[in-house]
Each structure stands twice: as C-alpha cells, then as structure tokens.
Image 1: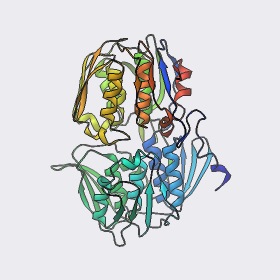
Image 2 (image 1 turned 90 degrees about the vertical axis):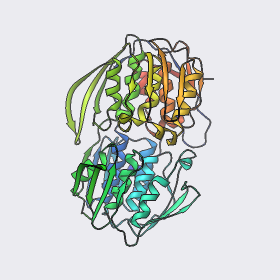
Image 3 (image 1 turned 135 degrees about the vertical axis):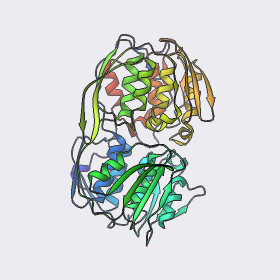
Image 4 (image 1 turned 120 degrees about the horizontal axis):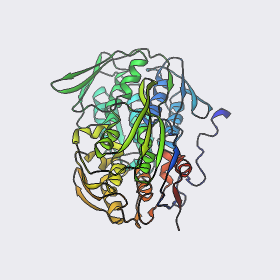
Length: 463
C-alpha cells in the first residue's frame, strides 16, 4: 500500500474503533455557543465519488472527501476491486478507474464496517460483473437487511449465498450474462435505487427504477456528470429514472459539498443553546436532502441562508443559526426521504419545542444502524421527555425552551446518529445527558467533539 494512504485507518484517540472499551460521554448545558462550524464533506457524495471513480476510465480527482471510517472502508473496497486509490492530503484523493465491466475479483473479504450505504452500493456496482465477492461488517451492519438490495440484483442475474434472511456475511456472485431490469422500489430508499442503477451500468439496454417518492439524487447527478445517458420523468407509476447501460464513464473532478446530515448537529445545538449564534458554511441544500431545514423553518427556527451558490453540481449555502423558541409541528410523511437521517436529531429538538411534534411515515428508521425509533423514544424517556411511540414514527411532547430535564443515560446501540443527537440535546437540558458509547461517531463525523468544543459545547467523558 502506498505511503500516501498509511493514515487511512487512523481514528481520534478518544474514539477507538473495534472492540475497545465503550466511550461514555456526558453533555452539559452550554449557553452562548458561538463561532464557525466547519462540517466535513457529505458522506453520500463521498461514497459515490470513490465508486464512480472506480467505474470511470481515467483518473478522478476528489476534494473535500469525508474521511470517516465508513468512507475509508469504501476506499479500501475500491482497491480490492482493482482501482488505484491514493490520498494526497486531507480530503484530497485520486482514483484511477478500471471501467464498468473490468472490476477485479477481490482476493479477500470486503469489510464495510458500519456502512449500509457502502455495502449496498458496492454490491450493486459488482452485481453485473462476472466475479464474486464476500461482504461483512460490524455487529450493527451484520443485523441490517440486505434482501432489499439482493432481490432486485437477482433480476439482473446475480446470486447471493449466505445467512438466512440475506444478512451479512454473504457472498455475491455477479451475473455472467446480465439483463436490464425495470424495478419499482417497495420502500423509499436511495440505497436501493442507487444499487439498481449501478448494476444497470454493465447491463445491455435500458434499466429503469421507479420510486413512489423521489429520494436523494446524488447517484443520478453523478451518472449524468460522468457521461451516462439518464432520464428522469414522472409517470403514473411514480418517479422514474431510466439508464442506458454500458456507457464509458469519464473521470470527474468532484468537490464534495459539506454534509447536511452532519450539519444538523451544530445547527440544532445553536437552536437549543440560549444566546447562541453559529455560522455553518457551505452546506449542501440539494432539495432531496434538505427536508430537515424546511421543517426547522416551519418550527420557527432563526436560520439565515447566506451566499447561496453551486459547488460540485450541488446547491449550497452558508447557514447562520441563532437560538430560537421552537413550536411543535406535524411533519408531512412524504418529506421523510429528504430527511430520513435527521429524525433522531429532530426528535431531540422537539423536546425543547412548545407543543407536540408528530413524525409519521418513518418506519424505515427501524432498520438503520439501530431501530432508531425505539432508541430515540427510550433515550427521550430516560431524560424525562414525554413521547408516544408509533409503529411508523413518534410524537414528542415538548414543553418549550429549557424544558428538558436531562439526567439520563442513553443506550446508543452503536448508532452514531443516536449518540450525537442526544449529546446535542444535553447542551440545552437542565441536567447532563449521558450516552453509553460515543465511539460510533467516528464512522461519519470523526471531528464532532473537537468542532463542538470549538463552539463552547461542554461534552466530557463521564464516569
């Protein structure tokens, strides 16, 4: 492995990877947060930049790549499939691609760590190549459903062998003679849509994916930028994306925009910290990702969008956020695909809003890194917040700013978003909020504690 990549597995000393002792942290009330929160690159775009770099012919250059464990696992996987992946400096990477039909067969197991996005997109990438690969992940990923991707990939001619229920570890045998497919996704999932489109790249003819509700469209944007023939239309069946197979993808220069899902945490922190004013620059506001910010506006959040512009083909803006008295709202279920990762943070914010906040149509959260509905409900109740759990969501009964009692211990279930959401809630609570294990934060936001401390947040090791 080249010397330029020797730091790929490095993690902050206080957030170790693997089976080390849990890292228990407590968040204390932190009024007056201020400063600039520079968010890391978008995780969804970072995964795709590495994958499309591998499928292109020539050298793809990436700046602003998120260097969390999830994305680094995808970088290692791309090497295993034959790409030359080089790190030139912080966030700066090069990928020498091999082309859509020329992937190498990995010599070892592909370990995707905690990343459902990584493993599902990589399976799609290789499903129409005549090679086999074995996939695994950490304890959380090994319990997440892969059938939702394996089912459509089987239509192309791929075959999976492994644990009952399509769970990892499993071996995927790529199609020898792939055929194009027309597939209607049974759930709103950008991962499923993207896996099918990636598989369609090496199938002859036209592959079509139909969604009842449009999901994040980073894959379509990158396909178009790389020269693939893609059309998007509204049909009686739903939102349809058609891809003509076997293009020669051209290499890209990708400037990864800053992650709106990661930005949700310092944004929320400013909203619950009395007297706070925080600038969060360069945030991706792709309409298929910005539902959280639309919802905050409806709740009365004081967030100014400054310097709107386009970077890397994505709309971005600088967000100036001030402490706000929020009101509870009913979030439209159809908004869920555009903010699916932000619901735990929204629920924790809703605890400080005046009146109930209703979140329905989010059953997908039950099969994320954890059952995020159950984990969020349990964490809120442990900290004195009234909440009703529904099969497809929850209703949080807020009592206004400064109303969260706190003082509880939250079980994170090795879920980075649960850990960060409750640490942020603790910054505006009456008593500290403690999470049982903050190590998973490194999978998506390795500098979370450093960034929050720079704003004045008191997040400290707990006994």
